[in-house]
Image (cartoon, rainbow, N blue to C red; front, side, top):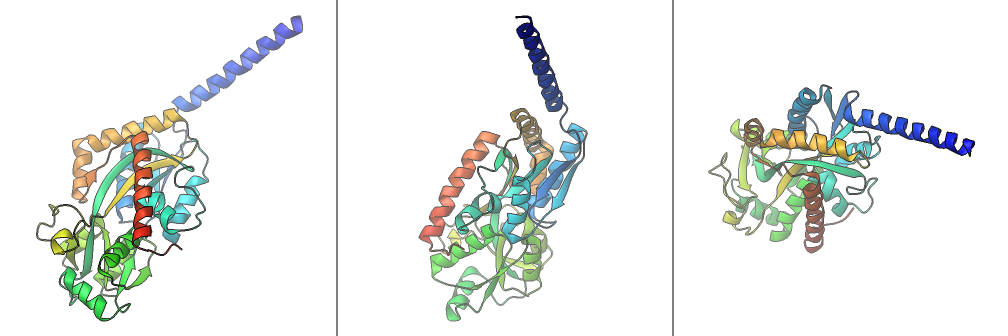
Length: 324
């Protein structure tokens, strides 16, 4: 009996110690610098969003949040890196819909699961897509592009910075029965620079990536893939206005942890990000990039992610887009 009592006491002490260690670790997050992985080169929407958030998380939590660019392989390299990271909150993924939705629809085999391997933290922003050509291109409007593609199938080429942009372009092609040659890139920024340089005929990308080059007179915007004209490009028609009725396409960004990160850490970081985005500073930053704030909580981000995945798979099926 004495042995049992003594054992119970030791067990209680061990349980209390374990609880204390766990409690200490959770209330002292982060314990060292946090990596924010992005799957695109500097200058893309996810990258600029990540750097804005990193600055404020560093100030709020008194530890550096360091952005690391890991572009390539249609965002698979970065996504896999985060999925395999320790679930302690010290690795974060600021990602677009390419790795978190589109890849699951356009690739037969992925080395990560966009749902099971990640813990949603917060939505960040949404950006409409813009169809662009070099400013000196003979293509001056959407109908010109359709006519040129019909005249010489496969002769034109387009820059594909991510799987989401390729899907958006192929959807447009499917609507008009045209085809062009896809030129893949490791991210949006290099893809768009080659369009601006005239190396590639055209592309479609989210507005934050193309707006500076449009303003600089290096790109011509043909159409915006939203339900209304964009405030920063009031002279650019929507796709519906050019004859591609009902066509809309957006890029969105969100923050994710690896699956298994403690709920209280997820909630803590989520609250900081959403409070920032809902502030006048956050709204201005996103608006200056051409986007709208998308400050949804973890549960709503996961729901949105699943709905988007279903919609994208249906687009792939109905547009007969090849699955690689």
